[in-house]
Image 1 (cartoon, rainbow, N blue to C red):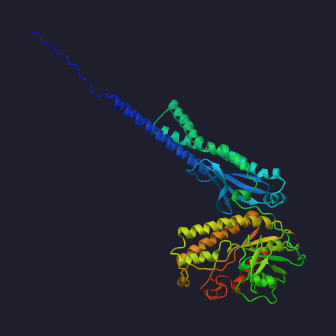
Image 2 (spheres, rainbow, N blue to C red):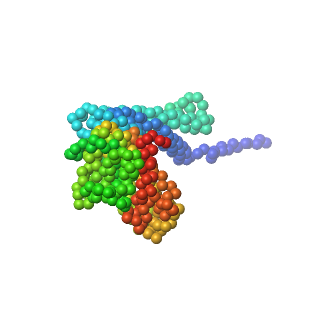
Image 3 (cartoon, rainbow, N blue to C red):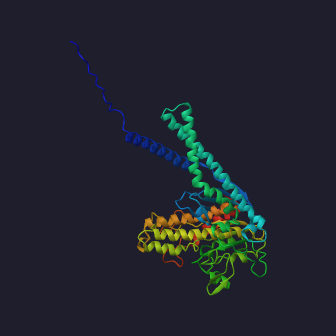
Length: 475
């Protein structure tokens, strides 16, 4: 009896269906693309962060050319960093990555003086634009190299993690770098190509930051002030507002409320110097220093114009900024608001500070044209408040608000100091520490004094001593 064996063909069910295969393949492709995009983003971010700004020199000016933080907009201004303040450029660029131009040094000479004042020497002014364009091209050539370096490192790490070997590693790295650079060039290509032509048309720093170019201040008609040894330009702080009037005041002295306690008077008396105090209460840079000022029923000539009549002056002390920022208005807004760091007050201050920074650039450039090339000292502002004191709470200035005001004052002083350093001038910070408002032996006039928050006689003396040390070269 034979036994027949029937053979049964088993049907394999462990093979994936075609749709499942395509799904997995798609997931692998999407995962690879996601990794490439992550590598791309990381590489570009790394390059933009570490690529050094290119320093260029033109006409006595030193400017660092780099990039502003990327934006989603495809057209808009770049950034100019002037005396530590970031200001939108007046020219627009194409692309999400735009130039950031940082002014680091200015050496005033005839070429620079010509640059700030429009003249017939167009070829000289073009030198600045050409230097900026060259710096921008160099920056992006370096950025491309840093992107490639970062991509190689990241892709190599991924290949090692995936345990690729030999040819596959080379293919992954090479292909990945090509992808990363393609995206990089697509994002920055428009800017890299178009920005040099835009920068080449920049004829002056004034035009770049939006300052209206003005002709040099003309000498005020009148006899030379040959005996004047030092000049003081500025606002009510330098005028000595709130002090006793001068013994034999001129009409300008009375209109500007210059007093006998002003630090200019102290310097003259202590050192037996001939100091001409041109400071005027209410003065700003455009209305008082480089332009005429209406005060006390009189139209006063620009302080700088009068200063040019002193051919032998060896020192010029400048105290300016509070009126430009409308400091008193800012204090009132702060006192009335619930908080001094709210958006409205902050925006108001930032607009004023940006405008002042542009005007300050023009003033600093014109100070270098004074006869006899005097020593220029820029006074920073004294600190009138102490946040630890609460004696001003009754008028709405709580310690928190005082702290915010002190931050704003520090921002102004930073601009003053950075601008002086950029032009090679000296800067002085009078020290009122321990003698602020509400302290014993305060150096500041109180709320019931003739000129609240202005220095009193002791404060003016401290300012005079600080300026004297700077003039004599003492530490």
